[in-house]
Image (tube, rainbow, N blue to C red; front, side, top):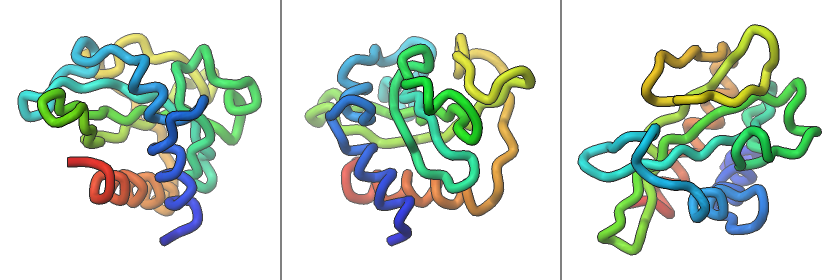
Length: 142
């Protein structure tokens, strides 16, 4: 497995500060993230290196440590379906890469209900994020 993918999956399964599981435990489901196949979703925002695809930190943008708020880091969001009838198991259903002309890191107000600008990242970086999602879903998802 690619080194960056292995790193990302470890952070996606982490309940420690900066990990996706901790963020999901604190997030509300439904709302802006809507639903997927009749399952409520949560939005998991994260900062990642736009050169490598390595995820640095999961949190709401205003709570991400400062060193991960400036280039080369940019913000992404995983839309995560939550199966409440199956022990709250999760499945990542979408990756959104955000962009703002004035700053590479910003707080999207309504990430699902409004048009989302897509940041242009290299195919190699997108491959790392996509592969990370697939690995997470195969091992930890439903």
